[in-house]
Length: 88
Image 1 (cartoon, rainbow, N blue to C red):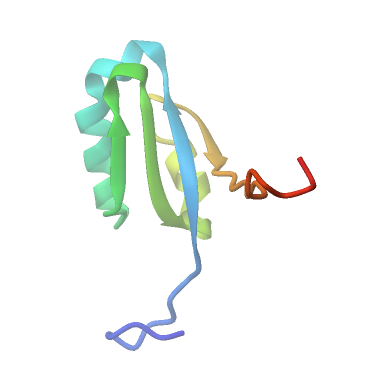
Image 2 (tube, rainbow, N blue to C red; image 1 turned 180 degrees about the vertical axis):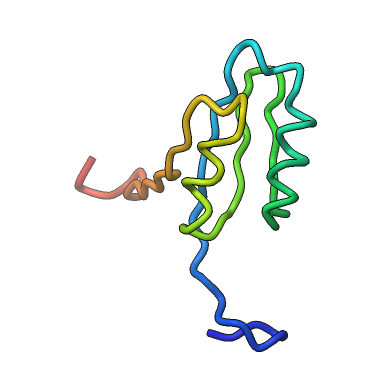
């Protein structure tokens, strides 16, 4: 798939990023570093030190190298059957 600029679009993945306890007060700085990598869809849970975002798979290793990032994990999706389903 090509973007409007003619570049190939890389598939995005949802990731969950844990921030080190001693860097929770520096989350705004960490977010700015994400933005410098071109990541714009950023959601914060600052009180618990969690950041979620959609990123190109190739950027996951770059994110993990940012100071204050404890770990980066791909988000998981679960689908449950409806409550009246015979399988529970």
